[in-house]
Amino acid sequence: MPNGLIQDDSLRQHPEGFALSLTLPWYRSLWLSSVTSLAVTIDGEDVATGDLAFELAGRRYALEELPEQSETLWYLQEHPLLIARREQPLALGETHEVAIAGELRLPYMQIAPGQDGGPGMYVPNFVRQTLSLTVTDRDAPAPAMVSDVTPPPPATEADPFKLGLTLYSASAEFRAGWFDFDGLLDRVAELGIGPGIEIVASQMIPSYPRVSDDFERTWRAAFDRHGFDASSYGANLDMGRRRDRDMTPNEEFEFSEQMFRSAHRLGFPLVRIQSAKPALLTRLLPIAEELELQLAYEIHAPLGPNSPEIMKVRELYDELDSPLLGFVADFSSTMHSMSPTLLRAVRRAGLDDEAIVRLQQIWATDAPMRERQEEFIGYLKGRDFDPGRLGSFAHLAFNMHGHVDPREWGDIMPQIKHVHAKFYDIDESGQEPAIDYPELVRVFVEGGYRGYWSSEWEGHAFAELGEVDPLLLVRKQHDLIRTSMRAVTA
Image (cartoon, rainbow, N blue to C red):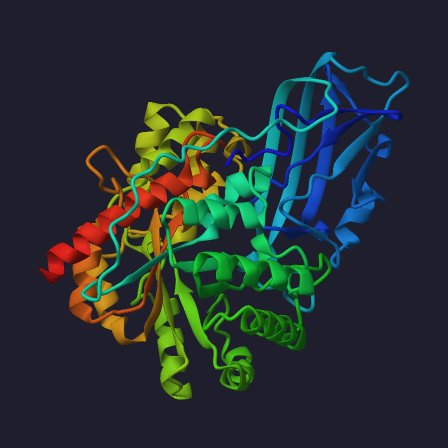
């Protein structure tokens, strides 16, 4: 997924001058308060901030008003206009060089909590683009999809795992509007993927964090049509939704309860939780019991089952002693190398061979994630390379790729409620080049796991839109998992 606010079809006619049809530069919906700054240059001339206006769903905002809009959602499939005043409006067919710079704050990826009632520190996403664009009045058409795919072999009673996917795997295509929600589920069914369907609520639900009647009707009709199962409901906690302060404990509880009730309404048996703060989880457990929801804290790179942070969660689970509490195992934690997809992306962003070698060397050390990030950013600055050119990759290269031994999953196997079968690519031999899937399958089969493996292609974080068909890759990954688990059970 390109880390961009504008695409080839973004430059639009507008009576006040021109407009840019914006794309949200992230995989999920964000609150307008997440937008920190926007700046535009056209043909080398800066557009004054006062001459820019942001228009979403028919409402216009001055740029300085955006940080206050903590109740307004920029839904992933919405393309607001950034309107620029200009004496002479642009005409259809004209070509201009447009540069845009923006910064967003990711309100659920907290680096450090706020102090004395102030706002915390959150992972930033920097966007800098320069494109030669032609003025148009319409969106670019979606490409045709490959449909001539051999059906998968049927599941059998002997298969230890059930297979499915998270719709997050098609984030870039969904964001671009190549599918609406119905069309995405139809494509999944067409390729024989399923039956488990997982969603990231903040990505798929236009009325996030609540579920509207219309969305519920669409959801249930699609599931009835295709015979899908709801497997896992991905819930984020947007602690930094407001710019002036973090959520209070009561706000965190209310936000989480609303998501739990949304998950229950859609028929999910499990919620992937982001926070395991003792006071919050203690308050939420009675809600989970009422709704019969399992709560699974995600173990994601760079952490593993025995990391100090996860040991604290395990100790809390021992105190609460509830069968509803467990973990989501995300295989980003247990990689043996950095994904080729990521390395291609940072090369496109300007890293040379020396920098890519250094990146992998720093990644492979056992230093804490923050220290590795800071060492790499310091290395880039020492070479007079602006880390901002990498967007969020300077952070994500470390917190999306972990190198814990896969056998550590066995230490918590009875508490694993769901699996994120994370992957980035499938090579010509049918293997994942950065993750040892046959070994992971062996560990989980021998450990007695019998739940869903939900395929999660995260290459969209690094790949260009249209570079691959992620759902075809999911089919290939299902073949790999199916072959591996049947080899073990045989």
